[in-house]
Image (cartoon, rainbow, N blue to C red):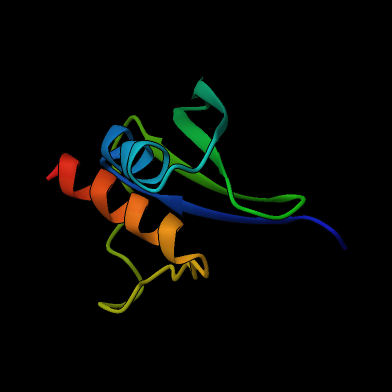
Length: 93
């Protein structure tokens, strides 16, 4: 298997996509609107066939996250890239 997709629902789709694309600098690969009540966006991660999918439903999210520790951890090994990300995020508040 060479593809990985991580999908997460959110009630704040625009803000989440802005964080990953504008803040972290990941590419927006695509999006969809009003498909059976769902809309979403695909965000690329470094590496072939790896992306995040964020979705929202017209009637709200399916419920709270599975736990308080519902995290996605990204490792940035290049110090200058990490500093650029930190500056972009600081600019977003």
